[in-house]
Structure formats: structure tokens, C-alpha cells
Image (cartoon, rainbow, N blue to C red; front, top):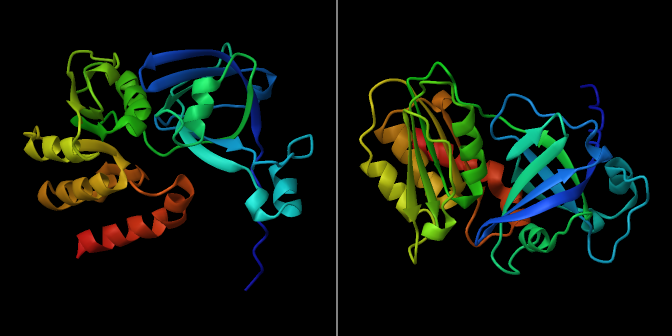
Length: 278
């Protein structure tokens, strides 16, 4: 067997913070710009994402910043830490990238950084990636998620063609976390307030109780992995939605750090799929 060539590290983009906005008590919006976005482009997906790069504590990387060189010259524990966030908007004319961050005080890495960010601060990131866009041929669309999936759901709603039918279920902590989303004729958004209930419980309950319209549905279901597992079982087995009509995965896992979840995510998803196919 021929030896496979080493996978080349992706090139990082560098951006500066142009402006910030606290859009809800726990959601901060950053608009990024600068010459470092000259080569950045997005495609047709509504769940495009970027991987923000945060330097390991006490580590300074050589300039110009080069991920391939860092991976070759630095031990793995000194590589930048990544955090994945949805592209909320991309303005190709002004070359400005909008990213929304869930912030819970000092919890986490990217959230606290975003809460403290000021105009002129810089950040590096990889991407974009992406895999989903609403199929205009579908009879209707189902969009389900918690705060982590809210930016992608918002983009999908904005991108739906005129006359499309969609039902979105969005779980947030309380009424103060609701946002104004695209609600053209045929689009219904149901906000679910979690309160003291477990994350994802209101979503599972609402989708199970929903009277599904007839016809071909294209579904986007993302959020906390435990809730997503229950919803996957319900949609595949009870609602009999074909796998190819589902974009469904856990963005995060309760009780797991981002690194720990990414380390097991692929295997966990494959195991869930096997369990639900048998």
C-alpha cells in the first residue's frame, strides 16, 4: 500500500474585533474584520463554522503564525486550543464576519474572551467548515436546538426561499434570552424556556408532542448531545424520517469539556446510530 502523504495543517485567518454587542444577557455578538480576512469566504451552507484559536497559557508562537510549523515544532500540549462557533453572518462587501457567543460568566474559554473583547483585539481562526443548508425542494423544515445551535437556526430561517414552511423549536434559559428571528409567512418559531429543567428536556418534550405536517421534511437538530440522542431516536424510529433528511449531531456534551467531547464525538455518534438502526 502506498504511504499516505501527511495531512497539511490548514491556514489560519487573523481578524480584529470591529465592534461588540450584548444582544441578550447571555449572548454576545462580535463583528470581526481587517486585512486578515482578505482570503476568507463562505459557501452555500447555513451552518458554516470557524474554529477560534487560543494560545496555550504562557506560550508565544513564531510570526508569521503558521499552524503547520507549530504542529511540527511544539509539543501537542502547547498547540492552540480551539473552540468552534457558527458564522452568524458574512458581509463580503465590507469583509466583516459576525459570530455570536454564549456567555456564562467566567465559565469556559471563548465566552469570557468574547465578553471582555474590545475593538482592536485580534483573534485567529481556521475555517470555514459546514455541511447543511435547507433543501428548497422539501415540503417543510424542522429546526431544533438550544443556545449553541441558535445562530445556525437563525441563518437557516433567513435563507429559506419565499413561501417555505418551517417550524423551529429553540430552547433558552428564559424569556430574556429570546432573539428576533426571521418570521415570514409559513415560518413558526417556538421559544422554550428551560428554567430549572435539565438542558434539552423542553426540546425533547416539544418535538415529541408536535403534530408533524404531511410531506417531505428536511430537519436540522443540534445541541446538547444527550438531548440530541433522544431526538435522533424519536425522529428516525418513531417519525421514520430517512437518515439523509436529517442533519443531526451533538454540538456539546453536558459534563464534558470541549476537548473531551471532540475526542469521543465521532465514536459516540456512530455508536448511537448503530443502536438506533438495530
